[in-house]
Image (cartoon, rainbow, N blue to C red):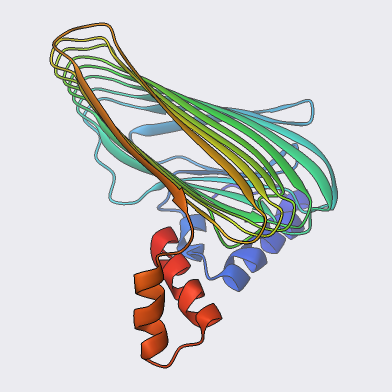
Amino acid sequence: MAIKVDRVKEYEALLEVYEKEGLDTSLFGDRIAAIIISGDRIIGLNNVPGVQIKGEEIENGVKADVEISDNVELPFPIHLCTGYLRSEGYQRVIFNIKVGRNSKVKFTSHCIFPYARDFTHEALTIIKADENSQVSYEDEHIHGEGVRMISKTEVELGKNARYTGKFSLTKHRARELKLEMVARLGERAVLELESKVKAVKDDSVEVKEVAYLEGAHSRANLKSTVIAFDEARANVVNEAYGLGDYAKGHIECHEIVKGNADVQTVPLLRVKNDKAELTHEASIGRINEAQLMQLMAKGLTEEEAAELIIKGLLGG
């Protein structure tokens, strides 16, 4: 991986955070296609056959174009690391990703803001997946106490393309989060979106997932889980639009409230083609009492049992 001499210390500092958090440091190896960002600087960049990453330092951030050729299948994920190691400031990141025909790739994205006290991160990710491609994108966050995050992802799927997107912010404070994911599906395209967020104290969370099932026989599954404690506020909106012949979409949102948290969930289904089919299930409530009692009967305290159930819901 190419690293400029004057940026080695920032690179090493990010590696140290990865080790502390138990993340996979092999993602920084030369076998991995990667771009490593710290603030408004590119501190590492590596390409592999079939993947071309071009980065540009812009005002307050970085813009990167990622292009995957046709017929590429990578044994390792493409690593997108966005870091900010100061306590205050603003960062803007733009990723423009194009995946060629018949290619199969996985992206591992980490946003690393461990010391943030008064920091705003704004991100736009545009993903275009061509015919018969398969794309997986996992987005995990490490936040300090004071992060305001505005993130939008736009996905366009060609014929028979498949996209799986996972967003996770469960181990650190959300503080102020605005997350939006919008996808347009071509013929027989498949979309799976999953977001998991834990909000505590006075955190404010807004999650919006939207699927436009434009192609015939396209399919989408949108799933969100938000756990809200204390005085946290959360608003979750999931939308699916049945536009293509025999398109199928399903929305599943589950929110758990503890303390004085204020949570709202809005599933919106709209069919403009009588051959399309959309379904949803949504729930807001306390931790399942039956599960709680079963765990307490095995010797756990109520707090320990509740924490175990929440970890199970959040997958961590």
